[in-house]
Image (cartoon, rainbow, N blue to C red; front, side):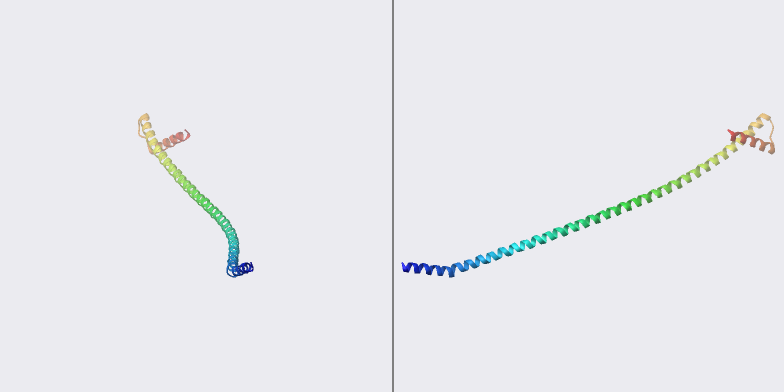
Length: 153
């Protein structure tokens, strides 16, 4: 029995030297590796949080810049539209003035043509009624009377 106790104690010493110590070293190494990985994961999580925060800041800044760009574009478009409208109004006023001038000119030309024809008709009508040729003084008097008559009507 002493031999068995001796062999058992010897086995415990040998196991402790050759099995337990390397096994404990492996477990300690594994424990350190897990602790390092947990630490790295925490650092990565913090870095991801910082990156997320930075991304939100960048997005907010981009939204603000986009809003400014849109506001500027709207302002520019409004100014261009107002410029185009004012040009169109100016062109319309100019066209209206030209058209009115042309109409007035045509009216004056038409009135002159009508007066000339009326004068000829008065002279012919008078000559037929009276049966004689009218001199210049009578002619001018008759034309003036006829024009006054036509002007009243």
